[in-house]
Image (cartoon, rainbow, N blue to C red; front, side, top):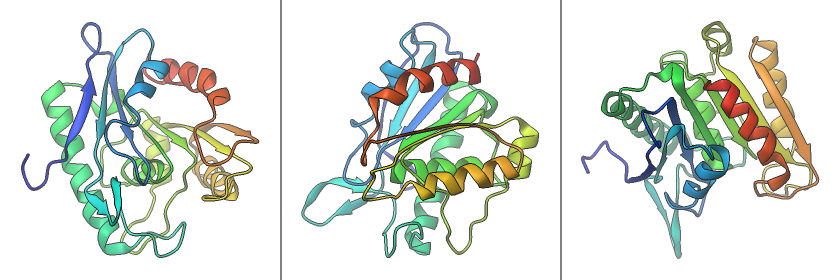
Length: 217
């Protein structure tokens, strides 16, 4: 592992991959957490699934996180920028290694991992992905980063947003605001709410699976 690289796990496609699904875990988890989700979302193993590990440790906890949280919705700029840069390098190396194009890639995640999926997927300086799959997350407000929704819409980026109305960690209004922002900029959003708390609601997975199959056809 080089200084710019991240530890990761991967599940190869059954044959030549139709695309990439990069799943970013939430705070307190690691690269093992969302790997089984890849099998749920892509049961036919059409896609190459990759799950990177966040760079930061948590005192007294075995899991990791992507950035420091001074206030929910507003990441610490320094640690956010560092994680953003590391993920950008990781994604670039992944595309080069697999030969799969950004236009055949979906960034997904849960909680803080959704935040990083939005960050890399909506940045105008970065290649536009095919889609963003956000479970219980938000579009960050942070110095040094701005979403370029219009350029993503022009490139055909789509979004799937799912959130629980009883989420005590990241309130559902974050998802509603994300939907409004994305749709105002021209991105097609498939939006789902349920009475879930802060977790991936299994009730959302059939729709997410269908959306993923349509996004990377």
